[in-house]
Length: 262
Image 1 (cartoon, rainbow, N blue to C red):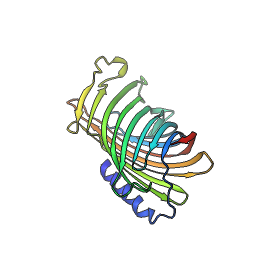
Image 2 (image 1 turned 30 degrees about the horizontal axis):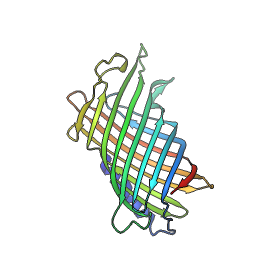
Image 3 (image 1 turned 45 degrees about the horizontal axis):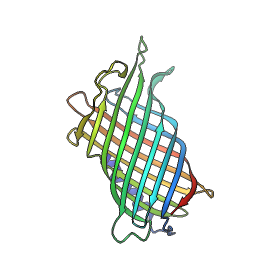
Image 4 (image 1 turned 180 degrees about the vertical axis):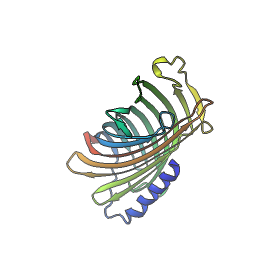
């Protein structure tokens, strides 16, 4: 499902972008950047509940990039703790407080013939550490709270696309994990004992993530951001499967910290 959504979203962006009206400068060098803002998340986790949950929360991302004429190296860390509610939530129950975090390092090369400009396609791979955790607050007589989680250290091929649009930059990204180390709680984390890692591949882990974003300068060191992302994860290892579909819509600002260095 996520792969079809990603393909449709990227195709829509490519059709909407049209001819470039401005050419980006080479933009080589290193840059440290802090991104912050708010996003609205909607997710469905069949194991936790048959209901869809949604909510808004602030996010923060710290990133570092180094770009040469033909390659891009990027490191980023992001975190958010949204409180999600469902269509039947009354008086604060049921709810889900989700903890998400991700640390990613990736290396990408521009396709042949595009090294002299920033607009175009990049292909590469990323190593990513992800945490999916949450407290599910049930609406029952005992007002139970259970904590579930999944942590992944995964290697993923990625395709990126960049395009100048007006005074800003339009970008899209698709990634699909091929192999991962997984730590999974099969019961409430507070009662879990064996959380040892398992090596999994596409036979047990099917996942895909797609994001589309637009940034535009609004100051000497400040950009305004808007983004949409969708991801799907299905992890089955002989126990009840862990499945989750997420969608995020976010807005915020990016602060360029320090001067860009060659």
